[in-house]
View 1 (cartoon, rainbow over the protein chains, first blue to last red):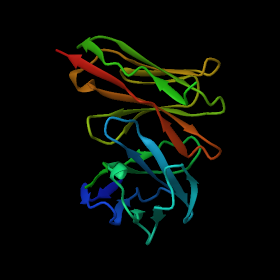
View 2 (cartoon, rainbow over the protein chains, first blue to last red; view 1 turned 60 degrees about the vertical axis):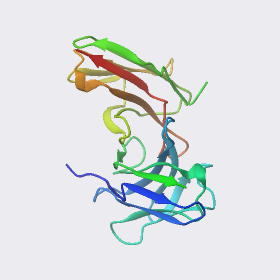
View 3 (tube, helix red, strand yellow; view 1 turned 90 degrees about the vertical axis):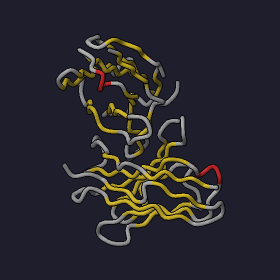
View 4 (spheres, chains in turn red, brown; view 1 turned 30 degrees about the vertical axis):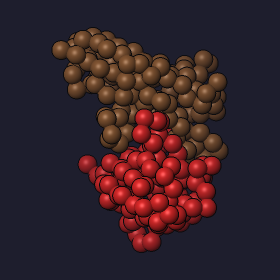
Length: 114
Length: 111
């Protein structure tokens, strides 16, 4: 069964440093997403991406965050200057369509900011 | 009302028991609903999609009550492997791309 893959599985970074999280969505999917889950809290939407542009973003997704699809397969989330509160599990997801289509999640990148 | 609300549990049940979880949502315009399962420190995995009044898949049954803005998940004949957190998930906003997750209901099935 096709799946969403994410790398790295764990990233440890000093506060203030830039970090890039990588995702390979399911190949025939057209919509891509990032979510995060702070330890002990619920999963929160960050951003959705379609046709090479952001289609929706949350209040969490401020100027420090950016997303990119640099080639036909990868989908990346960049955090420019990390803060302690960025420590969380980051999940990438993809779906065939938008409305009414389930999103399939990768196994996540655990980001630890020191 | 919160966007998506669930009883956090935990629900402690013996193997073989039937257990039901409830979820309420605030956006009356939402058309589709999902139940995901999340194991400790793992990714959410799709369990069921609910588009009309309900859906059944083996031991799992989901029901939707649009008038009350309420979704339920019923698990029959619980297995030890059903122990997990069950997330009620509702698409929100104009494009319905933003999934809003409930806090999840924790289920512990014991021998």
